[in-house]
Each structure stands twice: as structure tokens, then as C-alpha cells.
Length: 232
Length: 273
View 1 (tube, rainbow over the protein chains, first blue to last red):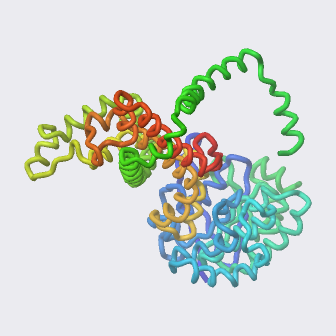
View 2: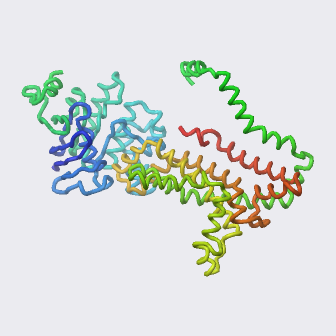
View 3: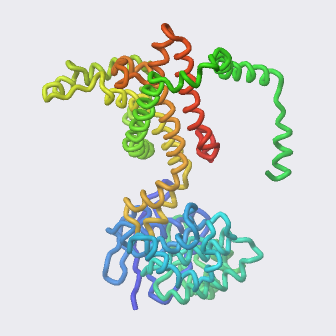
């Protein structure tokens, strides 16, 4: 059982983003809030993609002094950021390619992930030839294939068509449950937060203003935004 | 192209003033070449282009332009990376860096050649020390390569810088989150993403090096087989043997066009999408 404990401050032009959060393994926290509240900044700070002061502890190890490539934080980016010049197979094999070296061994290591995410039939395609749902599966498989200790997902549903959302959301919730490590999912959508997170944390103007289950938030909303969000 | 997009393009009519001025501009670009083709002694061309004078100059030009293009790649790609990082610098060093890279574009090549001579010549700033240890650069094939690299470098740097700016650099963040070191990010993600820009820059670089005249004749002179490249040979022949001059010009034209056409629009400068 491991725990991710973050206490981090990221200076930004309008306001500093200050976040104290704890997520234990096997749990998924949905980080919600209005646009521009600092949700993605928190994820980037955990992953080491922006500089923040403070600490990002995984159990008693502080990741915050490590560069992104040594943190072991898997990231699913908002528009997935698949490598456009690589096939699906090589996108998923990328983590093995940089840790093991050599494409041949890396592609073999990627095969189980392709199978598990139902991507074997798409393995030779380039990202431009994928639908939104397929690209999301590739992004998730690519992140999990790096065998991260922590998984963060930035608006994983935002770029998907409305018609496929319900199915994709169900699949994604299953994959996230299977992951087993501490997970944080950024969303601005109630349905996504409800389906993907065990608990919610609300960030407004860079500050965590409330944390709890959806029922708790709905019963005693700390801010007008939470009241509107939880009652939708 | 989707039908709607084609309709939009059809609506973009070319007005008469634009058409006339564009035609005049195109004529200025193309008519001199037609003049060259019209005046060419076609009956003697096969013999002329296989003459020793032409083959020697062609071989030297291809060799030196290839080496200088490679040098531009080796030094120009890192320079382009530095230039793209300079957006975060203070305004004065940032502008100085850009100005330094632009100098060969705005400087007459002959002046560039004089500057190289004053730097690397026998009594030059660095040249005097090189001469002391027995190294002489001016008027050697190495001098041709240095002169070509000097004038061609900005073409490579600016093409690669443009590609760096238009590529989605966030892919690099994704790569580091997957465990890639900065060197691996550059090799596995950045380089492939800017590949077309590098190719475009290398083409411009090669054709510019191939056509280099002013800096070369000033800094390297015109020794047959050593520093007498195609443009220099063509210029010198113009007084004594115009037919050979035209043959040399045609060979230069064909090589340049062949390089440009071989790469087609995908990698051509101006078509970087």
C-alpha cells in the first residue's frame, strides 16, 4: 500500500496554485474545478513538467527534486500528445525503448499492452488515423506501459465525441481500477468525475476548497461553484 | 481537397493588377534562364559538358558543397536549437544572436570573403598562429568549404528554427514523462519531428553552397582543381570562351534544379506544414 502526498506551490501570473492532496494506492481522486482554476498545473507539477516548490512524496520518497523522466508518473495528456511520427505500436513501446534500448526488444515488451487495450489491430497505424476513443486507449496504454507508480490523467474525456463518451468512460474506469496505484483524474465534467473518481477534490483559483465524496459535496457545498456542480 | 474548400479557393479571384505585377516578377525570374537556354550552343554541349574544365569544376563543386552542407548540419542544428531557446532570454543577447546568424545573409559575399581572409589569412587574427604551426587555409579547398559554410549556414539555421517553432513541442514533455532523458527526447522525438525542416534547410544550404562565388574567389581564389568551382569557372570562361561558360552555367542549373525537384514539395522550403 503506497500513498502519494503532495504539498506544492506553483507560481502563475494570475495566482499561485497551491495544492495539498493525498491519494492512496487503489484510489482515484477526481480533481475538478472551473476552467483556469489550476487543475492541469497540479498534474504537471506532480509529473515534473512544471517547476513547483514543496514536495511530492510517494510514501517517504520525495519526487519533487527529480526530473520528469525519473519520477515514474504516468501521464495521459488532454489531447493525448501521441507521437505523430511513430506507429501505435511504437508509441506504446516508447517507454521500453528508452529504458531497455533497441526497438526490437521494446516492441516485444509492448505487445501485451497492445493486446490488453485491444490495440493489436491498430498497431501499424499512425496517430492521425485513429478515432478519439482509440487515441485515448493508446495514450493510456503508452502511459501504463512505462509501469508508473502514479497515474495522472488530464481531462481524458474532453476531446471525445459525445456519442461514444459513455462507452469509453466505462472502459476507462475499468482500466483505472485495474491500475492499482494512486491515480488523479482532472475533469470539469460531473459524469466523468463520478465514474472515474472514488472521491472528489475541488480547486478554485489555485486553492483546494473542498474534498469529499459527491454526496458530501452535494450535502454541504463550500462554494457556489460546488453547489452548482454537485447538483447537476 | 473537399468540395467546400475548393469553392472557397475559387472565390479568391486574382485581380488584374496582381496578375500583371506577378507576371512581370515571374518574367524577371525566368527570362534570364530562357536567355541562357536560347543562347546555348546545343550542338557542342555534349562535348563541352564532358570537357576536363567542366568535369573538374563540377567535381570540386559537388565535393565542397556536400562537405559544407554536412558542416552546416553539424553546427547549424544546435545553433537553431539555441536560437529557439533564446525566446526566453533577455532582449539584447537574443537580438545579438539572431543578428549574428543573419550577418551572412545581408553581407555581400565578397565582404564575407575579405573578413575570412582577415581572420584566417597569413597575418589574420587566428591565421598568424595557424601559419606558425604550418597550417595555411586561404587558397585551399578547405577555404572553399569554409566560405561556402559561412554563406550557407543561415539558410539551415532558419529553416530548422522554423520547424522547431511549428512542431508541437509538448510531445517532448510526453517523452520525458515516459522516462526519456533529454538526449533521448532530442533523438527520438525532436529530430524526427523537425526532419522535414532539416531536409528543407539542407537543400537550401546545398544549392547556396553550390552557387557560392564572391566569398570563395576572395578567400580561396581560383586555382583549377583546387578552388575553381563551377560559378568561378563559368565567370572566368565568360571572357575567353563563352560557350564553355554557358555549358558550365547549364551544368550548375541542372544540378540545382535536380536537387530541388528530387525533394518535391513535401520537403521544399515554404511548404512546411
